[in-house]
Image 1 (cartoon, helix red, strand yellow):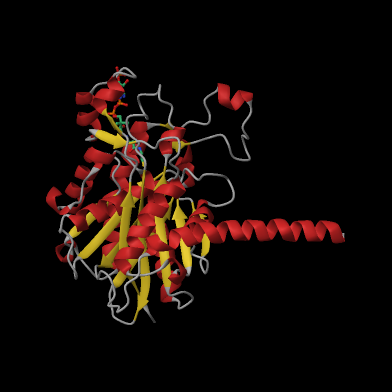
Image 2 (image 1 turned 120 degrees about the vertical axis):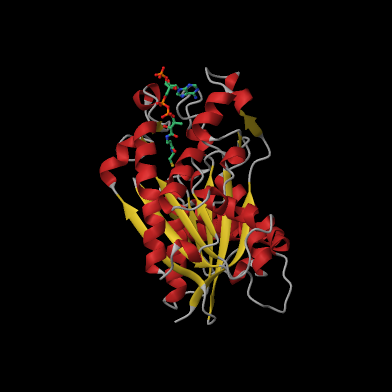
Length: 367
Ligand code: COA
């Protein structure tokens, strides 16, 4: 049975930064309150021409570069997102098209901030079963588009960004070792975006009632997160036959510094074994774990052979953890530059559109 190794990684965030002081000029809040209650100092916010797919493609190209793969090597793309560009088509399909990953099947996965863990596990299981060899897993969000900028309970928390992993099959032991996935739909109301789906399709009333914004019971979510996070990490470790002593790094979902502190206490681990960057990005939802991972790698913190626990929680309610034996890129001889495939991807995409148009005209004339 092949092993599923994480062989590539990349991240992208919008250029525009919104600091706590900027927020204090928009609503009744201040830098001290936000830092004390969340640990957040600033977050990146998408401009009008930035979308989950554009951030995802930028992150994916970097991940493919690290893995030394071209877009056409990918068998499967899973995009975890809670801010998809449309109800359908899936954001993953937009990414597939923009990348020119013509061989890949692509779909979105909706598990809120836990999504990247669920998606990485799904990709790893597809590799372990032998059904695919190479997967691109992406967490991409522009939740800023769904935030009520008048609601100081939520608008201070979220930021935009994307992170990507490449997973590849190898006979060498290692890679993803274990994962646990949990859900409790009875708590769904504590963090939701009620309208825009088929229960409350957009209309004047839903807009008037602000149902297209994120609604959150902050205290309930805080209690839930502190209850499940450390426990999920322990479960995944046990499943892999490991203990916290074997682990070099815990990479948690970056929602709130105080939640991470509580998880550290539960696991009896010092905070310096946790990768934390919530101060500079806020809560980028499903993108937060890969973004934190990429930063840790770029700082030289993560080394080949390190055991890592990824752990997250979010709306749904959902929570989960995944352990990995860090390997890095697989040995390969060729050098590829995935960026150079983008022009071809655009040309290919237009040619396919023209071909469909001509096909439609021919069929129309014949029928
Ligand atoms: N600036 C200033 N004051 C604020 C504020 C803000 N941005 N937001 C809330 N307050 C005020 C409240 O109105 C309240 O005032 P009151 O006591 O006069 O009524 C006071 O601060 C305390 O509010 P409370 O909601 O109890 O604060 P808290 O310590 O629970 O912190 C959160 C609020 C949202 C930061 C915290 O509950 C949290 O992080 N929850 C988890 C959220 C999360 O992670 N969501 C995403 C999950 S993926």
